[in-house]
Image (cartoon, rainbow, N blue to C red; front, side, top):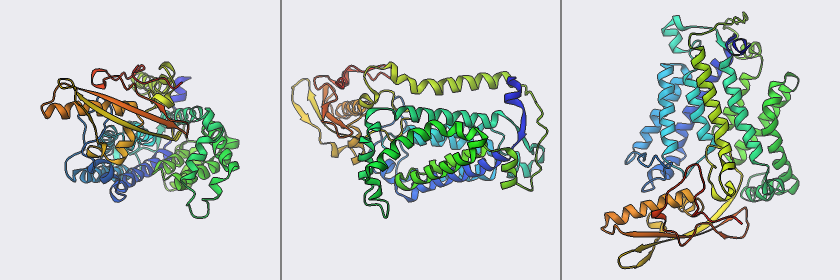
Length: 437
């Protein structure tokens, strides 16, 4: 039964079309970062970037070389689109995109993380077997079919993304629309729809519609009688997000996944009529069957487990941010804060309050005022900065207060703890983060 489920061959039109759309979106995301000024603001202007903990060595290239970095990444996106040296191009795009993701937290986005995963999945897909330069240059690889697992891996990945997205929204400030109201206030200047987005009924529609959409869209797309209507709802949902929140390529990438839900014959007729249609449904067991199943099981176990780690860490993830990243917690809270970093020379006991603008961009100042892991990282950086100036025996204390979704400000970090003397715990609670209650 498992062999029939995974290795029955079906027409590959959906994968071929998806490759073209995916490559185009990778190109647009890369060059868009250049022309919108995102690279300059995020990677060039700051003196340094807050990378993921463990990736401190990963910093932007000097000068304007990050423009070249993104241009090369965009070229690989085009190569994916046209199917030129597909495997190499996809590997290189995955590595480069992962590099720019892990080297900075100022513009953290779940969609960026998703693009890493999808790029890595695409490496193993036979997406260049038709309508590609690779197939034209090497006709021996041409094929009109693919094993069923090629579509299932995308469906299961998106099921995980949407399901955790729905579950994360089930908390008081989302359910009573407190957060939605805060989010929509920044959109009141929008042409035509600005006033509409301030209406309370709209807030409830967005709050509960968001939960229902995330929780039900994959099952409704899988069920043939509701598939068409679910797709129309998906178009409205993602275009709305694109217009209101400007979340890059993600809405269009999400719409492209519909290719794997519709019948292969439908996709073939819509996009690749001249391509022969495969209808034999043969079961072909590859020599790498056991390896594929093992790797797939490990990968999806990790994908399911990572978002659950927050439940095994003390206090709430909204407060501590521990377990927040890589967990599909998308646009869930508004967090404001302020912090005072005090450096104490342990020999002279002389305290110095740090002027954050001397070291950080505005975005980075927000990070060191609200996020415990970045506060800890900046404390370590201050220690290194002072050591280079000859002061190698210092302590760093932080007075930080935050407000979540407009709630009263509360102390986040224990102001009596020297943050240069403590470690960051990846999978358990850091006791120097004070309780939320």
